[in-house]
Length: 74
Picture 1 (cartoon, rainbow, N blue to C red):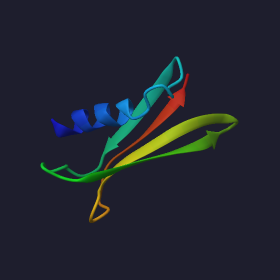
Picture 2 (cartoon, one colour):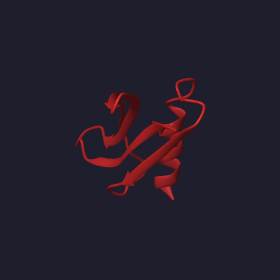
Picture 3 (cartoon, rainbow, N blue to C red):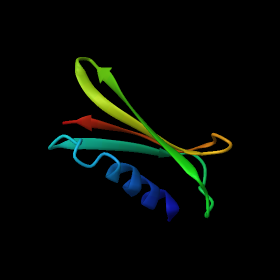
């Protein structure tokens, strides 16, 4: 489905920035109807002294969240 494709595209957005070993968690929030224009956002945060990344895919015009996830080094 579109969700796994969206997750794969989000992970590709981190190319060159991913740790050697990591865990990714993703929540599929709302179906993404195609065709759509989306906004992909990332931010870095701290979990007990370890930096991690988070990402979202949202509808570009309505700001509706479709997917949210985190990438944590292991």
